[in-house]
Amino acid sequence: MILLRRLNEKGQVVVLVALSAVVLLGLTGLAIDSGIGYGVKAKLNASVDAAAIAAARAVATGDNDGARVVAARQAAERFFAANFPNGWMGATPSALNTVAVHEADGFWRISVTGQATVPTTFMQVMGFRNITVNAEAEVIKRDLDMVLVIDNSGSLGPPTSPQGTFRKVQDAAISFIDKFNEGPGGDRIGLISFGSGAEIDVPINKNANRGFSKNTLRNAINAIPLGGATASAEAFRLAFDEIEAVPADVRSSLRVVVFFSDGAPNLVAADYNRAGTTVQGGLYSETEGPGNSRANRMFRHNQRNNQMPGNFSDIVRLPRNGLGNVPLASFNNQRSLTPSGAEYEQTRCNVNKAARNMVENLANTTREAGVHVFTLGLGERLNSLEVTFCGYGPDERGANILRRLANMDPNRNASGEAGESDTLNTSQPIGLYVFAEDADQMEAAFNQIASAIMRLTR
Image (cartoon, rainbow, N blue to C red; front, side, top):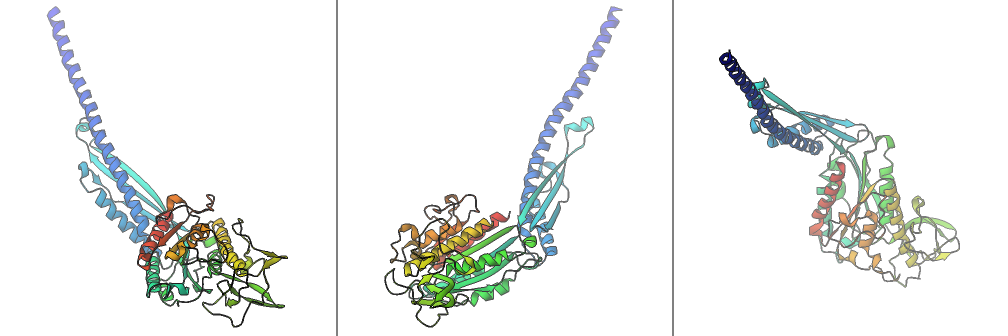
């Protein structure tokens, strides 16, 4: 009896050891196969993220939304295949699912989901032959409403600038607009140019279909003539009016003004009292005489480089507001004008200060409306005091004015320029000012602005 009991006990131990071995093998297999599964899952997540970002970039390709959806899917599949090749760690990926939807609120929603099957090794003992892992990613790409403003003043040609300078500016601007999405459902881009007066060369598309024509913009940029003074405020006023004219219910979710100039503002567009008669135009501060003498030249405010005949020194006072009801006084007391009763004294210095005040006032209003402002400057003249008759300090250089328009943060200073805007308002959209020493750097400068805008679309 004793011998039989011992034999039974030995048999039970063998069974327990066998059972324990199966359990231990299963647990070991679970640890190893799960580790492989987690590795595949991490790789799948990264690959799906890359595919979604690629799809968001590709959605800017195509003449209509149908073509853009196809481009997005193809780009997602290419990037996914490059990042997650079939057989990676033994895994087999399933077909990628990419959904690109153009929402009515002015943005694209791109969703990408992926799946992979991982064969098990040790876990097959427990009846698990495969592990299935899933990943998903979503990217938002905002549509763009943009107005490009180009200075075509005479200082961009000889003798102030080398021959061919403005041609290089035009070529860089054309390369810039080529980076954006034309056609129905695409981005909106309008064009304004200014030299003594300002003109809308290409109105922004105000329809629900969005879109623009690259050929139309290229032709318009090529047709901009060289000549005139720096009517910055009137050009900026037109830019803001254009972008605000897009009906609120069909606006894109990202709105931008890109402003290029090679000098500080020097014209004030307004209705003037001239010996009891109202005359409308842009009074020009850059005339002969001291700062307290009167400006005597006027240009058509709505035409480029069209001087009005006569001597306008008989205009005694400047109005409180210019065209579009833009105040001549600074919104933040940056510059003060010499008063004359309820209006301002008409002097060269007051005209020049008002020209600077008005463009900064307009930029502030534009940013308050949620519009991003980006500025480009060309030439060392911007880093000097162009005007000597007002006693300006170093903060009145043209480059500093362009920083203020952009509301530039020092952390966004891609051009290497020292300092931020001295009127930085962090509650408003932060922009970027990029400086080009010469025309050969203009394409690079426009590229920096394009990159900054494209980052905002995602």
